[in-house]
Image 1 (cartoon, rainbow, N blue to C red):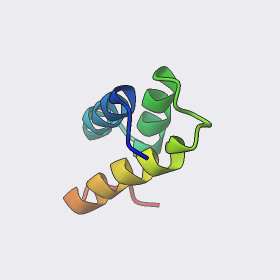
Image 2: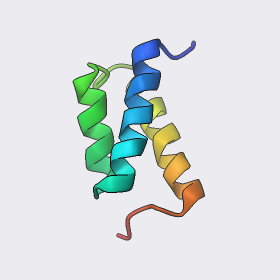
Image 3: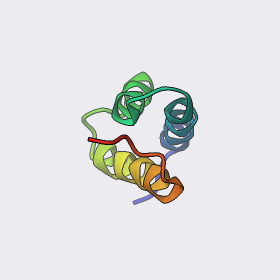
Length: 63
């Protein structure tokens, strides 16, 4: 099961927005919603990938 083009666009856009605005989770949700991915089976996987990118960069929000 691969990612569609719009899923990749949504993930890239959420990374760009997440660098500018906080919280990161809100940026991820906004972008996935914009591209109609919220609630699909890909939703959790795409969110996890974006979140892992931020974790690798050390840019995650403090809880």
